[in-house]
Image (cartoon, rainbow, N blue to C red; front, side, top):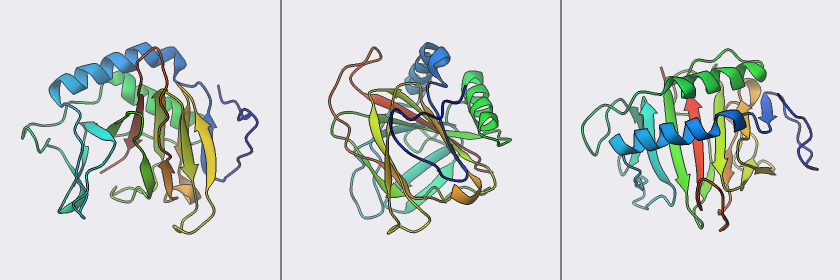
Length: 207
């Protein structure tokens, strides 16, 4: 159930919903599904076009997002193995659909980028613009250590709001907010039942 109280934070943006604790009832199954995916397609630190190494470790299910010195793109195959990325587990698809519906969107994802943040990892402000269908929202699920999520406007220089995301929280953005800049500040060390890291599942409609 959506909880509008953001633990004292004030946030209101057309096209954005923060669903506190929405994934809590599925957390154990979600982590098990991540483990199964990683057994087929291990986490790796991708390179960016400028030659830098991303601090966040990544893998994919469904249609995968890939970054390297040639640019950013989606690919059905894992460039490390040459094999197709693992299929999205039914629990992934179901959770993304239910969260999007709670936020007022009809959404069936075909790709999930799985990020693993260790303490010290971060994600700079960016837009999700490699997808072919901007009418579909982005659904982002947080598991593990808390993180500070940054949400800006449609221009890089727009004001940024900071939101603390906890284990089980889900953020959905689409419509007028679909191309908003967003990122994650440096993850702080801590302990959680799933380990000393944070998982982020980001569901997209690629095709």
